[in-house]
Length: 204
Image (cartoon, one colour):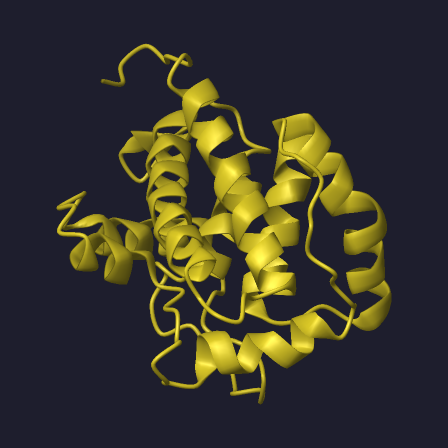
């Protein structure tokens, strides 16, 4: 569980903003290849440099252009007319309040995310990392930890798959965040599949 929580933290950080150069180099040299191997993904064909994270983040996620990609999961549910948990945004707000997670930032930092709601991917994956360290049967805000994890992971997984499909069609292709989204989508999909077999008494 701790290892999975660590991966959630990595992607939470990546969707909050571009990593420092040393962290980016470690991701590209070690972390991403290891995750690809674990997930059964082929080796990447992208030629990525550490500076690509910073070069891509603001243009892709912060500046509203025709190539802009939203990091809010509700946007992707509504865009696909998926109709998943229309009240989930409110549920996430209750969860963050109950856990005392300070997801609202005190000030805007240029080039980094400024979440306006807790369905931002950086917030959801951060919440998943926290919940991974808790007792699965513990009840929080009316649901067990495992139930919260199911819902958050499925929500994030759906958004990431929508983002992956969109980014794959872009020309020229995204490098650092194309890689990040592809691996994150595969990782969350695998987590959702594994979580479907986890049942806690009292949860449906």
